[in-house]
Length: 357
Image (cartoon, rainbow, N blue to C red; front, side):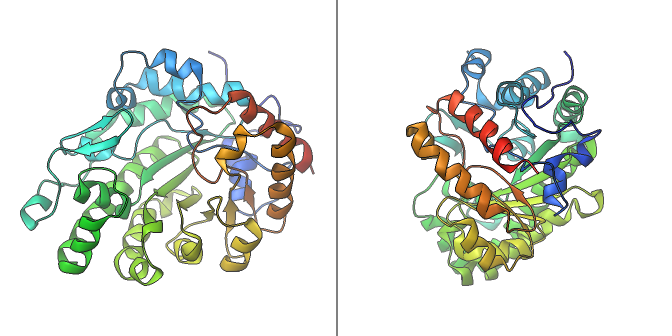
């Protein structure tokens, strides 16, 4: 298979991922155009993804280098995005350290035995590279195929992983999680410290194998007040991000419903702060004081509207992003399963067109 390139990019392709628009924007350096990628771009919205996944469970798909490589490359080929996002799931490293779990279609990760006591904590061991040789192999295969297009590695943040473990699966109210946080803060911090090592090790495996940037997803951090985030969460996210601090890869930190936490998430050790669709980039810039590059933030539901309604919103976000130290165009959360892939391709083309320097 030949190298994948972003053929719709108006400027000449970079010589290497380190000089790509995405990595440069993440570092606050000049770029030929605003880089674009989409959370969950590799996955359910693409018919070619559904075809290759037929009869293969999610966890197995994430651990087979042939499938991971193919699925990760699919949106780069189709959309001309400026980066590939490693196809995996945030609970993959938990399964790799022996947690009994399954990813149930239509539900999400389900934990057989929730972690709620000191004895339960002993089932959560540290992750070592030997637990995930397939992840490193997948990254190496992808880097070879992508050429100058960067690969973004990722992991789940300690709070979000802890919530899945404590709740036993997805939760609307996080009642067991908050009960543990307040009821036994020592156990909570010990759990999150261990999960920070797991997440950090997972990021490090990807970065050492060749990923050019990493993103830490704190999907459920918006369930917390700022005081609780600072008391119970921030230090552990900082430890996870610190695991790749010496590898010279930009670090993106994203959460959902985290408009009040943007500066705090940046201070955890990010180079780029992800902004969901509930906060404009203008407001996000004011809240973060121009200290970090920003990522975001088109509402993924807007892609179901007519193009005449989508186009001005894309243009607005690109224009707002010009004021930030760096801007990575993205959605304000992941691609929804029933999204028309052609709408994503049109967004990429429009961002490249209107942001060309």
